[in-house]
Length: 221
Image (cartoon, rainbow, N blue to C red; front, side):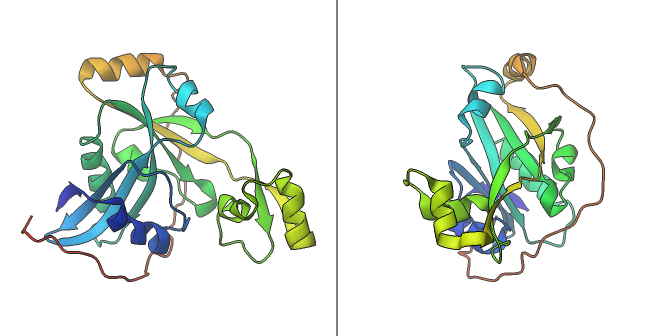
């Protein structure tokens, strides 16, 4: 199997139809895992939406990317770690952050297998919730009121008692440094989060069975 750059357009069906979030993130780098000529998984990286995170991770002067989508459709149990590990080698010098969603029973074993640093749980926050729309990401629901002055009130006007604010499940946060040995050491020394032992626990896979046509490679890998 090979890991090669792909376009955002090639990654989009995987993100929108197979990944549980069903939402397009900011994508700056997209890479695909190919089994011979067939695309069997994708990973994408982009600028984190949180500006405090971009500055707070290692301070100013360090480029921060987020591994924001990972989706695999392959019987090989090592396919995910293979894709992540090889894709990191194709990124520029940067600090990479990624999250394992506890709400999806994810612990982050793929990050542990590829030697990321574990820096604990994300901060406590609230999400917008609408009864009957539990399958949608909170931010997807919030998009309906983008640009409005009082967005929470607008949501109440639209959905009435079905709308509420709920505690957001905290996520396991992992960090990885890309670059030369000297660059990685400098970023590691500037890391502002405490490095902690890896968490353990039960995990489960989400349903990624949606099917769609993909463009095969024109040349054999």
